[in-house]
Image (tube, rainbow, N blue to C red; front, side, top):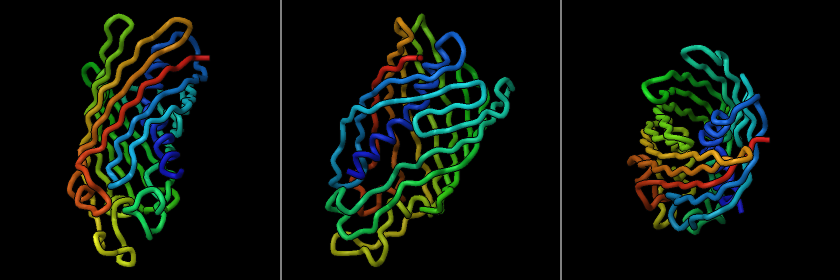
Length: 251
């Protein structure tokens, strides 16, 4: 149950750029939007089932304040050439021993809340963004730095958003979710201390406005897992893939 909930909540967070794009494409004052989407996640954890889920999606986009799934933000300079935001977001990685046979006898790895900030600026037909986050609940005690470019191409009502980025995750963060503590080591699952990681990501999103305030969106992403994660005895693949498709309506 814990793993299934994690995947569904993760989908809400990961699809936030799509929800924002839907809001930007809509004319009129800021509003709430609601919808639903289907999520398919190919988890890197060994012997953990992949999931296909249908989950709700809720967002609010104001001039400064926004709420997208599990990400809450405040824009300091909404109209400046460099957009600076303060952000609180959920980190929804984690597992319980019952989620996979490979976790048997291991302590629970908990979800957490991260606080951080981002700065973005237009570059060509899109934006480049840098963000920094730290674990506010000290579950992992780790940090993450994100550098990303997201293009934005429109043709008629259709919007296309290719994306490429690189995330640096501290050793505390990676080790908490992918390490094996000495007291958890057993035959076939040796103790493992993970180091920091650079995780490249590519993604592609599309948005099609429909009549009556509805928008249809889709997104696919692939994270290439570096050796710090791939070498963990908890992991059995070198990438993590996600796909989302959904519908959103401005209220």
